[in-house]
Length: 78
Image (cartoon, rainbow, N blue to C red; front, side):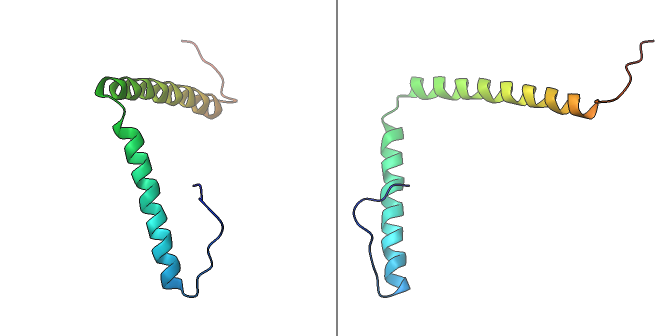
C-alpha cells in the first residue's frame, strides 16, 4: 500500500478510522480502474496463462512431495 503525503495525526480513533476507510476506498477504486482498461481477449489470455502456470506448480509440488514421502523406500520390481 502506498501513502500519499505526510503522516496524519488525529485526536480520536473514529477520525483515524474514517481517514483509513477513505484511503482504502481510493486504492480499491484505483485497482478497479486499472483492471477495467484490460480488454476481454487480453484478460482471457492472462487467465489461461495463469492457469497453465498454476498447473505446472501443482505438478512440480506433487513430484517434490512424492520424492519426500518415498525417500528411503526400496524399489521392488515384480
